Length: 346
Image (cartoon, rainbow, N blue to C red; front, side, top):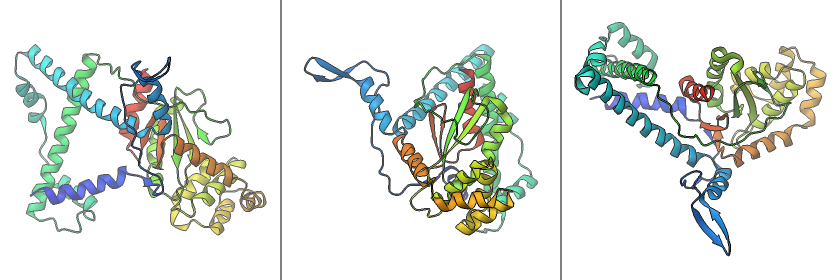
């Protein structure tokens, strides 16, 4: 009964989380071992090669397999920690874990009102194919929202138990070392304890969607976070390189972020004529901007940035490195917050 609605919702979620892909890149098939292991895996006469050396070289060829393994381990860690915390809390109260969950979570789940159902339907009616809000669909929405509320109550309860028991995750995240050039477009101080390097494509719709999330990061963390922008034009986006060059020409006049925002807000209009029109609109010197764009002087730099991203394992946009930790896709604020908070705590 619930399958069709779930399918619609999953499609909506996937549309928010996935990014633009590079169809020309091949899938990275490297496998992970025990990171940092001194186990000898090759002997060259009297010389030895350790698993640590192999992993280091493999990571330089592509981060995604390592990040996938780390993410799987974190899911397992979170589940084990949750089970142990619930068992310990229940034992301290002299009740069973099931009774604890009933008391703290299930019994506190609010009833879903008709207003909430209608609001959800209004926001997602297009994803549901315009299906009318009949009694059957109303029940499905109520069940879905109830499960959402239940999940949030569980998460809040577990967060409280984790804080109470001073849980610290010691598993090291895979990361790469990135050197940021002084002239790369960025906001936030160089001294910020967290640096986010973003690889983006001005013609990628998913890159545009992440803009509000980055603004929320800026508003939430202020000078604790620095965001650096790097170009990663995809070959199937013909305006990606020209738009990137136009943004760099705007950067020469100190208007990179204003021009960056204009490009993402006007993706359906990207064209050489519009680039020059927007420069005037944003108060740039048209002569300097036009000469810069017409010279194509930044095309090699844009291409080099994309090549550098490929070497780090980027094969789609947007992609991020948070203090060197890889994130792929237009993730929501909560995903960034989890990593940023971990990095600040460390």
